[in-house]
Amino acid sequence: MARNPYFQLPHLALPWEVIENVIEQSRNESQVLYNVSTTCHQLRPRSLSLLVARVKLKSEGKVLAFCDFLRGKPYLQPLVRSLVVSPTDFAPVPLLSLLPGLGDIVLITHGYDDTRREERPTTCLNKSIPWYYKHGTRIETLHLYNLSFSTCCAFSRMLSAFTCVKDLTGMDLLIGTKEGSHPLQIQGSNQRLAERLALRVLTLDWDVEEAAVDLLLDLTRSTVERLLLTVQHSYKFVDPDAQLYSFSKAADWKQLQFLTLKLLFEPESMLAAIDFFDAFHPPHLQGVTCLLSSDLISVLYCINETEESELPFQELEQILLGFANPKISLAVDGPLHPRRQRFWTQELGQNFPTLLERNAFVVTSSSSSEFRKHSAIHENAIDCLLRGLRWP
Image 1 (cartoon, rainbow, N blue to C red):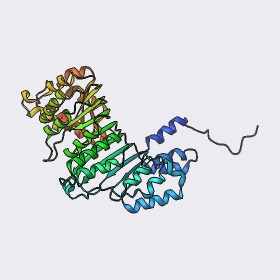
Image 2: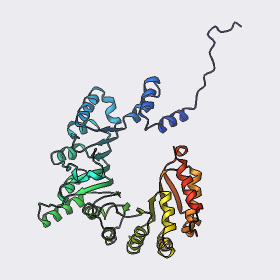
Image 3: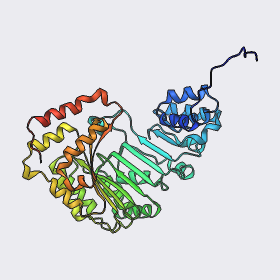
Image 4: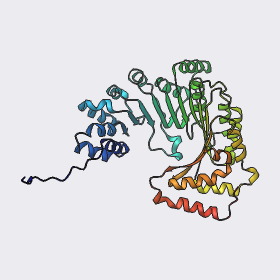
């Protein structure tokens, strides 16, 4: 038999599931997704769906340009699932009407760091609310980051535009002190809004002002099933004890099943958390997590420099053991190799022996993808450990 003159090497094909998984893992790599979409016809639909699934628009011009782009490529319109926009730049007309698959919106103010938060423009959606009513009913997840509102009424009106939201996250929310409406009018408006909202997940991260916290609690306490609270210490207008009291006095959280309390790894925050857990006992709570946040050096310094009698580790563990499925998670800043995370889990877990024995104490890091570049984090902590720290 004559040899085929067009001899070809064997086709080295990966299983289709592996290829799809590689694309899935590249969902945050826009250049990779673009290259795949333009070189492989079979993988184009999946890569395109991930490429446009989350769209960030940082100016009004980009919003309008994106509208024109979608009109020219209508097959992409249902693929957009999430938008990241500034409320001062975002024009919901006609963008919302072009996105039938939109379910997630991130409203964020760009360009103002912590030192300039008082200078941020106030968020006002009054003119846009009718369009949200008409086209935003599919939005179920809302993130509010770095936003300022003139009054509680303005914040409440913004929430009224998203009555179908099930999952709400707030971080760095500032509310002015001037209130133009009568208290009874405000109370009636909030009551009507509470009847329309059906929030299931509420996350209150760092630097949410107490007025915003109180409003969100009043509006959602009868429906929320998962709640994450943060003990605030960053700004002088926040009183941690008062903040936790505003939570703990809400004893009618009938739907609440999972509670996470986020705080810094420091004695003052832990004592406030102990008081909170002592007073807060919803009827259907199934799990409680205490999420401690710090860096390894600060954790070791706190243990070393604080009098042993002033470290409330035992009290915190005991109060948590009074709940179903208690956990403590220590989230350290910076990447840390998984093996080193396990090492520090065993070392620091000695301060919470019962939870450690139950595998209910764990050390995690913000990222483990670049641990080789940041091995000094672990090495410096080991150095501190070997310098004579007091250890259980």
